[in-house]
Amino acid sequence: MAKKSKLKIIPLGGVQEIGKNLTVFEYGGEILVLDCGMAFPDDSMYGVDSVIPDMTYLFNNKDKVKGVVITHGHEDHIGSIPYLLKTINVPVYATRLTIGLIEHKLAEHGILSVSKLNSIQAGDSVKIGKNFKVEFIRVNHSISDAVGMAITTPVGTVVHTGDFKIDCTPIMGTMIDLARFGELGKNGVLALMSDSTNVERPGYTMSERTVGEKFEEIFKNTRQRIFIATFASNVDRVQQIIDAAVHNRRKVAVSGRSMVNIIETASLLGYLKIPEGTMIPIEDIKKYNPHQLVIVTTGSQGEPMSALTRIAFSDHRQIEINRGDLVIISASPIPGNEKTVSNVINELYKKGADVIHQSLTEVHVSGHARREELKIILGLVKPKYFIPVHGEERHLKRHAELGVEMGIDKKRVFRMEIGQVLEMDAAGAKITGSVQSGAVLVDGYGVGDVGNIVLRDRKHLAEDGIIMVVMAINAKTNTLVSGPEIISRGFIYMRENEAIMEELRRVAQVSVQDALRQRQRDWNTVKAGVKSALSNCIYDGTHRKPMILPVILEA
Image 1: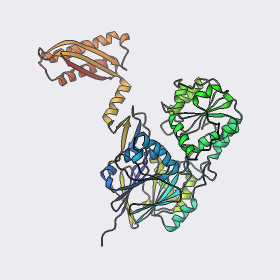
Image 2: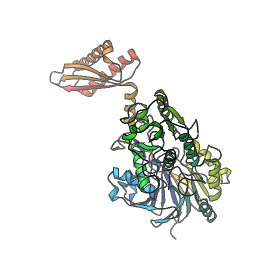
Image 3: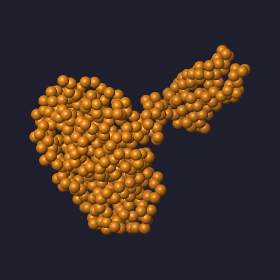
Image 4: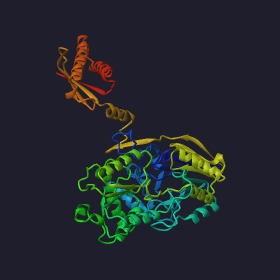
């Protein structure tokens, strides 16, 4: 009798981090991909636009990949799809709004016409390959049309919650299908993979409707112009802004490309209800009095090129902050973004605006479940094995402990690392190894061509500046024809430090002439000598270490 295969679960992102969620399920020579997201670069990644998972394992096994299923339309779950589909063109299954957002991305990459997108709805089941059946389960989150999944395999069912919370009064649709999670638990679940983001927070996450009630209160008591910055993908939040504006006879203008795109997509698909005459072009805001306007913008995370940041720093072509304007930041800072958000808030105050943010009043609620909600899911699903996902190490650890509190054997709880391979069947589960994984940096059109060495150089340039030494050498006579000329950028201001610059020229000239007297014809050796001499001179005089770039021209 042939030996029965085991199910492999391989996270290529989304564990020990918030972002770039991608999980591989592999059985019997077939692969199913769940989510394909990106992350935003941190402060050390100079010039990097986005971070995507290392998908080498998928590319090396592309003939095994049978399909991609997506839980919802946030960037950390769909942002890498174009990079995957360019190499592995397989069917993608997602809900209608999620498909609409994916279409925008694929169109930007020029692959929409050749991609195989399939719209499903909560409650549907899809057979993918011979070994996977995926059932989509309605959940609540901070974007409409979010789903969890039950993945049936020959060795058992794996339940993945996706990003979720329990919201009894959602803005769009109905509450999470807890009954279905319970039914699955009664039938037997091999493994549960559950959202860990808010595991450190006790109690329950508040309903999205509480934000709408706060908007209504603020709008009713404000005669100023109102700006609201929120995540573009939070369609339910945008709906509540529009509802409050309509109730209080305000027009709505939108600034920020991603916000414009998502509002357009959500409106066309029926996920946003906008009464006729509510929206106005951003160019028309000067035609209205302050109490007649609401301006919805991107930039709730202080992103440098976002609309709110450009407005705050007087860099927006169409909008200026006026004294008395009210700015509402309807989001909480993603870990690591606190300083950039604070800088924007401070700049808005300097311009004379009033600012309301989460720490002052309830203008934001999370889309992620807190501890009591996570307990409910664990109690309903009753998995044999538990795998916390979607969290940093501290979240995964606390969620693993919560699973043990809920009665799961500690030996059956797995805190995984990116790239690890967990093999399981009804008889047992263990981590058996790892595959190539990590982060791939995207800079403009370049994917993966910015590595650690390039980042190190960019960091060096940003912190210490650069010195260029340009000289011309006659290769035949082995003599210095002109230079060395010293060019400084980001190191010191040359006009105010002529003595230092003159000393650097002298040191460089001595170094070159010494090398030429020794009949040195290896220009790399000459450059290394100049670099060493200048480095020592600069550090002795300034205690700085700029990047030094010698350039030799052959005359």
